[in-house]
Structures are given as C-alpha cells and as structure tokens.
Amino acid sequence: MRNADLVARGLKSVWHPCTQMKDHEGTLPLVPIKRGEGVWLEDFEGNRFIDAVSSWWVNLFGHANPRINAAIQEQIGQLEHVILAGFTHEPVVNLSERLIEATPEGLNKCFYADNGSSAIEAALKMSFHYWKNHGKPGKKNFVNLSNSYHGETLGALALGDVSLYKDTYQPLLMEVLTAPSPDAFNKEPGETDEDYALRQFEAMETLLAEKHDEICAVVVEPLIQCAGGMRMHHPIYHTRLREACDRYGVHLIADEIAVGFGRTGTLFACEQSGITPDFMCLSKGLTAGYLPLSVVLTTDDVYNAFYDDYETLKAFLHSHSYTGNPIGCAVALATLDIFRDDNVIESNRRLSTCMAESVAHLADHPNVGDIRQHGMTLAVEMVKDKASKTPFPWQERRGIRVYQHSLTRQALLRPLGNVVYFMPPYVITEEQIRHLGQVATEGIEIAVRD
Image 1 (cartoon, rainbow, N blue to C red):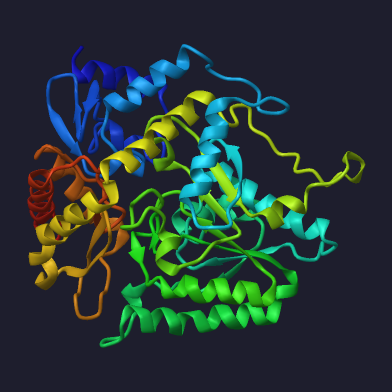
Image 2 (tube, one colour):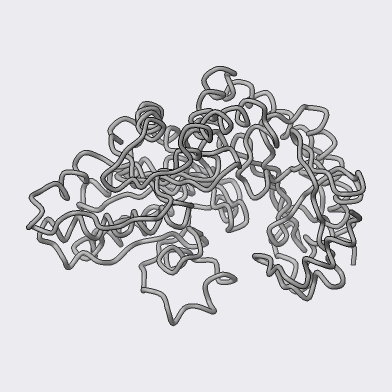
C-alpha cells in the first residue's frame, strides 16, 4: 500500500481528534503509520520518525516492546475480560497491590476506569458523594488552577481552564472556582520559581478560607500543566496546598494522568512535594501506551465513607464496561516490572540531562522566551518579544512550521501552540535526543521568520 492510498481512504471515513479536518486536505496531510519499533514510527513507504511526543504522552518503553507484547500474549490466552462487578481476577488484584506499594503512603484503594477523563469524572463524583455521605451536601463546588486541563468529558472539561477546548461548551459545564496558577513563566525578574509559587499560593489560601464550606476538592496537575503549554511550577505549591486542604477540610485531587510514571523525574510528581493526595488519577503511562486503562487511588477514609449496609444507599454506583480489564492490567503489571527491573528513574536522569544540553544554546535566542524542564519533559516556548515575553499571535500558527519541518528530518515534534516540547519514550538514546535538539533548533529558526 502507498501512503497516499490510505490517506485518501481515511479522509472519507475517519474524523480525527483535536484537528480541523480541512487542514488534512491541504497544508497538513495525514501521516499514515504502518508499524512501530522502539522510538521509531514507520510509514508505508519506509519513512521513519522518532516519536518525540510518545504518541500523545502515553508510550514509555517504545513501540512493540517485547516484554509488554509477551505479557499481552500470555494474558489473552487465559482471560480477555470479565465483569468486575461481583467478580474479580488475578491481574486486577496484583496491579492494585503493586500500585498501592508504588504510590504515596495512604493511598490504599484502587477504583478502575477506562481513560484519563473517566478517572477525573470518578474522582469528582467520589469527592462530592463523600461529603454527602458525611451530611455535607452543600459542599458541591470544585477549585481548579488557571491554564489547567483535565480532559474533555463534560465534568473534566469544566475543571479545565484552556479556552481553546472549553469556551464552545461553556453553556453545558458546571461552574468552578479558579485560583491563579503557580506557573513560573510569569514570575518577576529575579524571583525564584519557589518564591513565585508561594506568592501565587496566597490567592488559593484566601479562596479556601472564604469558601471551604462549599468546596468539595481542589484539582491540580502537579508540576506540569501539560495541555496548557507544558507550563511548569515548583513543588512547594502542592506542599502548601496539602496543608491548606487539611486545615480547611477540602479534598485534594492530584491529576497525574500525564505527569505520572517518571515524566517529572520521580515515579510520581507528588513525591517531590512530599504529599499524599486524597485522590490520585492515573492513566496514559499506566499501560505504557498500549491499552486504555485508568485508576483512581484513594484513602481508607474515602473508602469507608461509602462502606455501609445496602439499604443506606451510600455505595458508589459508578461503572464502565471494561473496568479493570485483565489484558490492560497485565500490561500495567509488565510496565511496573520494567520500572523495577531496569532502574528506569535513574537512567532517565542521564537522558534528561542530555535533553537539557541539546537545547541549552537556545537560551539566548531572541525568540525563545523560556526553556523549562521537569525530568523527561522539556519545553521551549517561542515568543515574538523576549524581553516582554509577548507571544506570537495564535493565528500565525508558528508551531505548525516546526511540526512540518520535523517530519522532513525523521522526527515527530507536535508543538502545543508556540511551545516545542520533548516527551519521548524512555528507551530513546542520547544520540537520538541530540538529533531532536538539532531538529527543534532548525524548526524554531524557520518558525520565527517574518
């Protein structure tokens, strides 16, 4: 098959996500992929691309990973799926035990869903229902951070604050309370990331002090606001937030869907703040890019609020058809095995240093407003004016030029607006990282031309 043949067929039948389909008929043709291996994606004509964005931040250990493939093959020969209501199976029990061991202390119960948005929805409902079961139905509001993103189902979308995704559907969404982000991009000259995070926390403190009686939970993406342009902040913010939530009787929901499983330099981002949230939502890297699966980990306190006689109607009546799918659980277990056996976090420290070095020369570029990094996530933000950090008009779509150039240089770089970022699989080599740094540099030079 030729690339053009599959593209033509697909344009007649497939509506692609997060895309203006008209673009694919002209300036941004679809890229058909036949196979993947390691960091590489290959089309039908032998062209190859380094998957620098881990196929939307999900792939941890490369495409067609032999160990994960073997886990799927073994599990599919035993049990492909079974209802989890009233039934159980070994993979889901094993995975729950492993996740409880790996996550911050106190997260002792696992509730499964299908994807990241579904996990957020479950956590929101759990928090509201917890307070209702405790005789506090007036606690029904949620707090988010400016520029946050938590998914695109209606509850999750309401918790976001990226207008590109949210504005169209605003009439359908619940109202939430928004506190200013600790995003260090906006700090004053000479101000440290930590100082700025503490300064920004003052508004959150005031909000909780004034409205805690009506707030169920605060929902945050620890350390990186991924879909909000890979904006980053200091972990002290979440240390203070945990203390405040305890003080005012408000839940803390940590959305580690994108930042969990080593993306920020530790297995989970919350580790860097030394906190245990009331709910931790995991997906994406949970199955290393293979299958949809998500989990909400929570505390015994939350679990016990629903534990009662049937007649009280306190049970959490929430489900998904593929909840706790055995094949997905087997993949997640294989993923955790690789972390355990291959010393992944330590290896990533070396790779993250190489990532920083690959773009360090851009720090003085007149159209680079910021280079930021947490572990295996690095972002370079293009700006029209460096001194004021004035952005390029979004209508100019400068980032698309980087994407188009990268495809000519054996790389898949898919910027978020004007933000070029690396979030590669952990099996990438230093040589491949240096190549990405060169491609990004070339792409930025092309993108910022008048």
